Length: 461
Image (cartoon, rainbow, N blue to C red; front, side):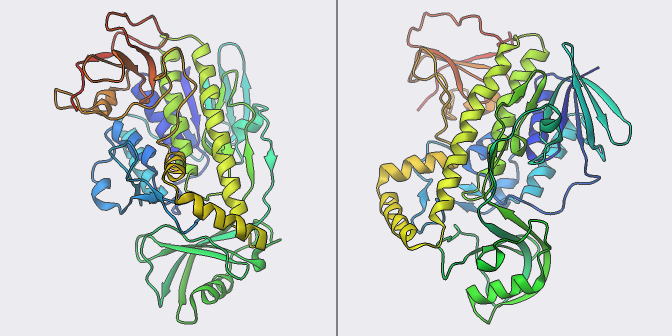
C-alpha cells in the first residue's frame, strides 16, 4: 500500500508531493489530464511563495530571468502596495507564468524519483480506519494510507469525500485571453482596474510575443461560463479601451471566469484532505490564488510526513485545517472587498477614493502589503508571542541562512545571541513552533520533531 496519494498535478499537488518525499513518505501523484496544460492561469509569485521555493533550493536561474515588481495592488487602485518595506529577502513579485512553475516543480519531483501518472480520472473513493481506496475511470485502483485532493475547483476528491463547498456564485463575468497584438507594447506592471464607462481592462506581457488581457464590461455579463471567447469579442474590447491603433493579430487562448467565492467547510475528512483550489476559489484579483495553494501544500507536507514516519500523532493533522482554513477565509474576504471596489457605480467610486486616501497612509499600506504578499501571515500562537509567526531568513555565523538550514525539511533550533528569544524552534515550513526567553530551558517533547533537527548558533546581524 502506498503511503500518500495526491490527486492533481498543478502547483499545489506538485509542491505537496515534493514535500512529502522530502519528509520520507512514499507518494503517488496522479492527474486526469494526459499532459500538462499549455496555458498559465497565474502569472506571478508573491514574496512568500518566492521564499518557499528558495527554502527548498528551487529558485536557481528563475531569479535571473523573471521580471521583479517591488509592489502589489489592492483592487488595481492607483496607489501601489509597497513591498520594499517587507521583512524578507525577496521584497517583490516575480513575473513567472504558472506553466513554468509547474515545469520547475515537476522536474524537481522527477529528480526525487516520482513521476506524475497522467490520464487517471478519479471516479470512486472509499476510506476505512486503515486507509483509502481510489478508483479511476480506466479501472485502475490505488490503495493508500492518505489522499490529498489538489484537483481544482471541481474537485472529485472533495465531492467523493462529502466535503461541503459553501459560498456564493459569481456576480460578474470576465474574460481572460492570451493574444498577439500590434499597436501598443505594455510592460509588466501593476494592473489598473478602475472602471471606465462600465468596463475594466488590463494587460501584461507573456513569453513568445504574447500578452495576457483581462477584461469585463456590459457585453460580458450574463454569458454562460462555457461560451467560447471569440476573436471579435476580444478585438472589440481592445479597441474600446486602447483605441483603433490596437490590432488583434491572433487569439491563442480565451476563457471566462467569475468572482465566485467558495471554501471547503473542512480541509480534512478522516484520511482525506483538500488543498489549493479544491479547498477555496475566489476572484484572481490581487494575484493570490496559486500562492495560497502553495502555502497550503507547504503547511500540510511536513505534518503528513511526520505522521507517516510515525513521529507524530493524528492530532497534528488537525492543525492543517486550524491554520489554513482561516488563511483561506481571509483571502476570500479581501478578494471580495476588491471586487466591490471594481464595480462601476457612483457610490463605489466614492469608496474607491476613500481607499486611495487610506493606501497613502504608511501603516495601512504596510498592513495590506503584508496581507497580499503573504509575508504578514501568522498562525494562532502559543505561550510565547513568537509561536505561529514566520521566521525571517536570518544570516547565520557559519555563512548559511535560516532558509538554507530548513532545506532538509526538518525542524531547526536557533539559540542565543541577538535572537528575539533565547531559543527558537522553527518548523520545516519556516514558522515558529516553540520559543522561550530562558536560555536554560530544554525543548519539550513535540510531536513530529525527530532527532534530525539541527542546532545552530546565534545569527549575526
